[in-house]
Length: 570
Image (cartoon, rainbow, N blue to C red):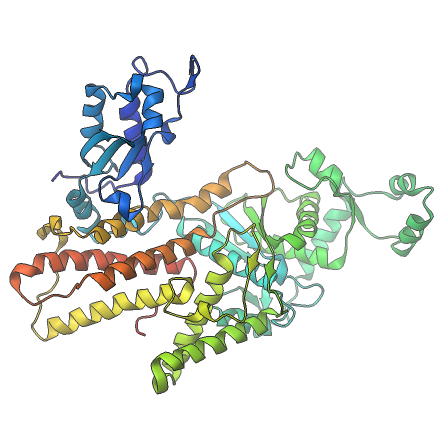
């Protein structure tokens, strides 16, 4: 078993890159992937290898370079001995150690030194695997248009399910970006003790508040003045030239005589803003627009850097309106980067519920399901808290597990979302997290009774005892890749591709947790972790406890990005 540098956590991406480099070799020996050789195009390095993830394939390989790739690099796909030697001797910072490899029908298969990988990850508690691989700097303002007054503050009864989806996504993105080192502020501030704040807190959302009698008039006046003096303000003479000859248009103009207008098309054309709707034209500046901009201005004052990124999390129905707001803000002199995270609609075939009714429905279903499973013990503050968290988990997973640009369809009559039996949704995830807590409670009781000794340090254990296929699957598919999963939202935010719109794989944490719970549940149902209290069995038991303790912390870390506290008993 190889020693691995303690200061360099194992990562999937560096390993794939190193394998690709070893396979391609020196430039003079292997043609560059960007060059043509006859009719053959050599593949990009990151396409040469694939990480396996299915239990079936992980029985005989961890990484695969398919035969089709080998054929593009070498005559008849025959890997030269020197290249094979480079692959098999691969070592380096953050690179998974290679135990062996062979060319088979499907391609070049590589196996990881699994005991070495287990020890590298688990010996120090896996803390480096539960956080992003790097820390970012900068400030992000998460703006949720659904919560802005229009002109009145929204209530749970006026909030649609599509709006609720954007609120939950804003909350999730804020938690993810904070984990990556960004300073995060939220917009708008809402009146404290308002019905909407009470509703959001029931979902575990800690949205910023202001005193009920607070006003933002000073900033609103500043924004109004800036727009009046903006070079993009449309003057009466310009408007007169454009509207001459149209009777209906003239009547409309008469209704808004003297209103402040800004030519948004000129703004995004002259400022070089990409990705905005070309039909944006002249916009009449209403009071709620000024209030919106003043709230954005206030949110940026919390930033510790001069330039912030405003991320507008909006529904597809409100996207055009939010583009108007964003360009208006630019016209007022704001130079912050602005990106738009757009959510698809939420559909409820056969029914129409507000956000308040939806939450009430899911809470009632959760309480009923708990009473059916646990009977009369479902009472008191503890169970009220459990039902509240489980309801929040159900709602979050239902609305956040789908790609944010795609529609979500809710079957409000089906109660599968609040069942612990099916391998889907938030309740299933929370239930399996609770099983881990129950396992360690049982172990601690065994220690108190003198059945088991305390868990020794990982450095004292022989991790070659972890031979069950589910154990490697949990480490290789979840513990090791999690850090890179956390990196993705910040990387997408920095990308300039796509212009105003940004696409973030916001569904991945929910899908990751559901997949993790399926594989953990399968393993837990198959393997008896706390065995007989016999000394010759302790090494394997302690190795498993180290793995499952890291898994428990992985649950906590992932749930924290959804602002869901773990349930410790069920």
